[in-house]
Amino acid sequence: MVAVLTFRERSLLAGARTPSPLPPQAINGCARWLLPCGCRIRLCGLRDRASICLYTQYDTEFEGAMSVPHALLALLSEGSKYGLQLREEFEARTGEVWPLNVGQVYTTLQRLERDGLVESDNGADESPQKLFRITKAGEAELGGWLRTPPDLASPPRDELVIKVLVALHMPGVDVPEVLQVHRRYLVQLMQQWTRIKEEASDDDLALLLAVDAELFRLDSVVRWLDAADSRIRRTPATRAAAAAPLPKLRRSVGARR
Amino acid sequence: MTALELRDVSKVYGEGAAKVHALCGVSLTVEPGALVAIMGPSGSGKSTMLTIAGSLEDATSGEVLVGGRPLSSMSRNERARLRRRSIGFVFQNFNLLPGLTAAENVTLPLELDGVPARTARKSGLQALDDLGLADRAARFPDELSGGERQRVAIARAVVGERRLLLADEPSGALDSVNAEAVMRLVRTACRGDVAGVVVTHDAQLASWADRVVFLRDGRMADQTPARPGPESLLTPGRGQ
Image 1 (cartoon, rainbow over the protein chains, first blue to last red):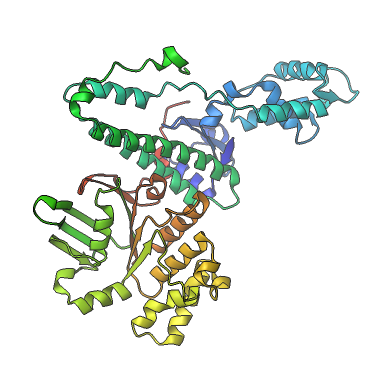
Image 2 (image 1 turned 120 degrees about the vertical axis):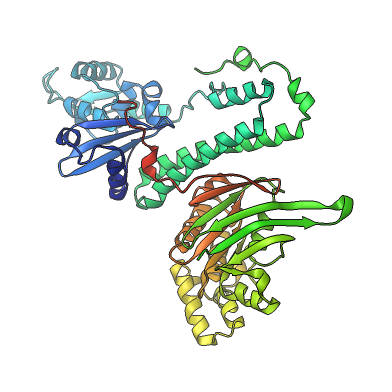
């Protein structure tokens, strides 16, 4: 998902961390930052003004979660397109995070055509001017992919959970104090995302959805911290100290890497 | 002049073995135009803090100043006037009077304060209009949705010359879209001379505030620094 920030946000972001004045090569080129939360921001040039695109964790995981064929089918679902056009749009929407060469595009299109998921006009086989369109079968394949849940069955390797579990076993560590350090950091992050939402235009749906996703994700971590805090406080110190070894979640259910 | 100041405020309920320290030496300063969120689990003292700040309850010790004036120096009548004129309250359960229309609910505090009915109604309708409720003015609370009721409650809290907005879980009973709408209104209200304090256990609500104060067992456990701007999300040099 790519969300374009409001002009004020762009100014704020551009003014805050990029060299001032912004060098022409930065304006006309592309600069990227990775946010602490794993999101990515790209500053790209639009001559006289800077444009910042916001990439959420969903973009950083885009490569693993979405195949090139499905990406091309998604682009073709908007209407018929040429091969070169598909490559340009693909790169634009993935913020050049995932460059594609023309060969890759045409190889994939050939496979999709072979499988009956796209069809082309009768132009020359390898011509860049060949127009592709999605078929009914391609629409069904894309619809199926959209509705296939991602693998959330096994718990991820969560650094925060690991830290808290480790802290439980360390003598002299005030675990609620450790929880509070993380809670404060998360709430601060949420304040920053809310600020972006506050400044966003009502019709900037992509940005609002992306920010909501981040806020709900961070909120769920804060809620876990609150629940952990409450549970730890209710557990007598002696029991906590003698708690069982760290749970072997990975062995039993398989943690995601 | 600060909008609200709590100096070493403590509150004790009960006596002897039943004694409960709801607040223990809490100090807080809220500047005009600022929105502060108080976060904490149930029983941490956050609602007690709000009722003491709003002069609905007396502190056992310590000092509370609203608009620079110590509550301890005010008579009972002066405090009642302060609550009518300068402090707006928003509660989770709206606390609208069911027998009055939205407009009458909003204008009631002004009329109680001696404002002529016509002037009060004009101000009330303006407040409702500002919150997008002009067409709901003649409706009774039970004819309004939860989100609309809370917007009426906010209109009632900001109407007139209020300087301090105190909200206790203002969107607790609402879905996330209506909760956000309510917090946008609270955020918008806290500009210029108006300050706000929101009590909540919900981090999403608290994240609308300039500063978040964490309360634990009646004590201020921690707080975030001044509200960070979105630019600080950027970490230069990473991911390039």
